[in-house]
Image 1 (spheres, rainbow, N blue to C red):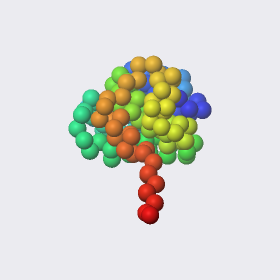
Image 2: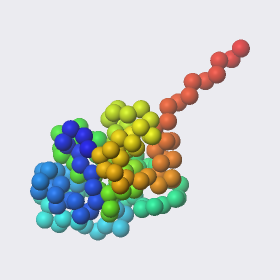
Image 3: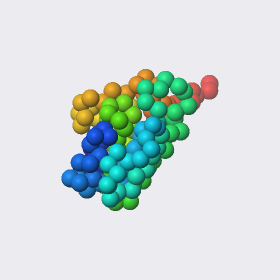
Length: 146
């Protein structure tokens, strides 16, 4: 996804991320997960439980935490594998946020398109996209008083 150090996919891609791409940090977004999908992985497994297809509000904190985990690991020199079950919704949401956090895009729309250029099946759910818009909205300048 970025500089050959951040990789995205689904749970089935983790073995490839570890063995072929040499990811040493795996960030698992599956709330339902109890272990790394590739238990033999010689990598640090970090679970950030994000609900799949959830329309519930209040996910911003978990979304922000997941973005921070990816960016911090990347900035500390690690190769990062990011995944959910299918690598479509939750992964797409966090990948979009990571692209924004790294300053590669200016808007959620642009970052989402950038993520889709990397992994075509990405599809953000409306509640998670709204959370990204809120997290990355620019403060509006206050109107000048006359």
